[in-house]
Length: 419
Image 1 (spheres, rainbow, N blue to C red):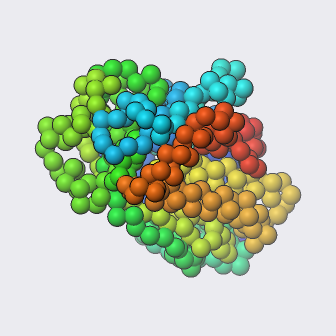
Image 2: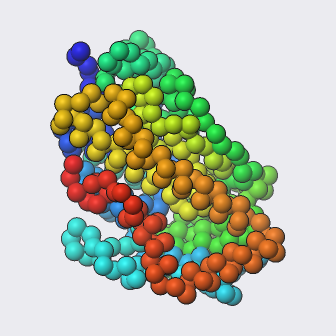
Image 3: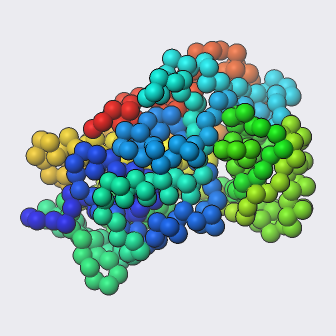
């Protein structure tokens, strides 16, 4: 049966655009459909967040031709300092024994494509990721329909159908849902979800710093939740401030001078004077897991299949892993002449990604519950655990490689190899 493409990807965000680039690099045709124009998604007022990108995920962007559009906005993470305490102002360094320090020099055996030592990861503002991926998608000649609102998805014999508002129908052997937590593709496929709300809000803002951050990312655990200071290009940082839903809403609406006064109490003075550099955003924090990643003629990637607490900075990296694994499965199927949307093809993808996604989601949920409280026993347990890991080099290196996406059965793109 003739079709419009090999794959129709609903959702042209970061995971969906990366999947389209990966498929195009292997000679497969993808169509991207999204209700928002690319230029809207890259506006400073659209999101406000920045993402920690693992070194393995950045290798994928190099392999599919997106890195040249992103490198100018990528801040290397050279060190990560994790501290635990009751009071604000202790983020400057380990005030006691409950701290962890990760340093890129400890895993210098890894190297980037040009032979330079690799970083622990990279911080990039989401708007720059979207704009860079949009430029790469355009350069690759990938068809994009945006704005184009999907109103129905149907799995038929041998083909999936995506109906757009206005009546246009797109057909392909496979439809991929990359359309976020409220995924229409997931609902149309009859895939259920499990999850819960944490009763927390992530207050996000970009700040100007009085001193150079030197590529150090700080995560300080307070009873209400983590407070992260994440380095951006220039003398700037992305702030992720976790509070109760009520307090988070109050922080977002507070006068700028009041908000900045609270910031200075949280930061201390180790980065000099700290001032807001843009709008504040609030995001409710919750866990969502799809019952399964596939259905007839359907696969899910990114937040459509799993959305987690930002405590470990792994949310987008999970979606980029999904894209790399699905692209490899589909490429291998195409070269063998197999049906891209067949149950046997999709089962390979589901087996590859389901266990890892569930494991990361459960780990972040455990960390959130362990660190977002001031119970004496919990404090003692996490303090002892952090102290032990900090003193054992192999344990630190294991966690750095795990966070960098370099452990397990990696898709070729995450190793920096072409499909």
